[in-house]
Amino acid sequence: MKRTHPGLLRKILATNVRRYRAARGLSQQDFAHEIEMDRTYYGGVERGERNVSIDNIERIAKGFEINPYLLLKESD
Amino acid sequence: MKRTHPGLLRKILATNVRRYRAARGLSQQDFAHEIEMDRTYYGGVERGERNVSIDNIERIAKGFEINPYLLLKESD
View 1 (cartoon, chains in turn brown, red):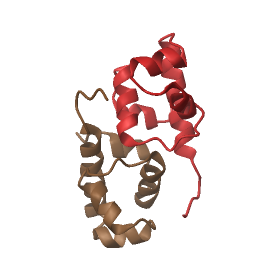
View 2: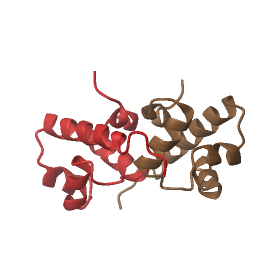
View 3: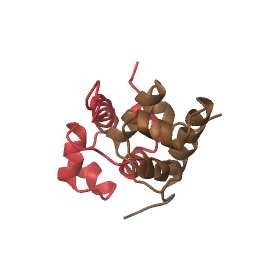
View 4: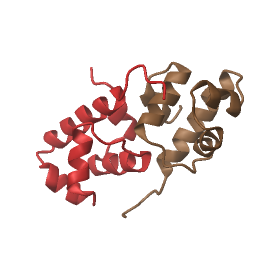
């Protein structure tokens, strides 16, 4: 598999997810529970360890009530 | 699994990927080959049938030389 920046996008997602969750004052466990996602899996997303699927990106975005593309966009 | 809009984001991705590829005048097969992705899998992405991973979203975006978030953003 050709990878010039392996997993760069995972790190952007991880940073964004962590930021949105913190802004809502929720713990990882509480947010994972709210979106019905395994909390260990969710923790892995925030650490950039998971090759998250688009359906799960959508689920997380719904939890934050934001447009999903914002989760892949580097913050200014 | 709670799904209010099941797979809506897949459809947005599918539409965008198809549009970027067509704008470059490439066939599905040629683009899939270029990014070293199985062409049957890639075809499924363009039909919204695949629960694409973030690493594959990144790979497709690199192939188009665009910022990955654009693949999840509804076009105006």
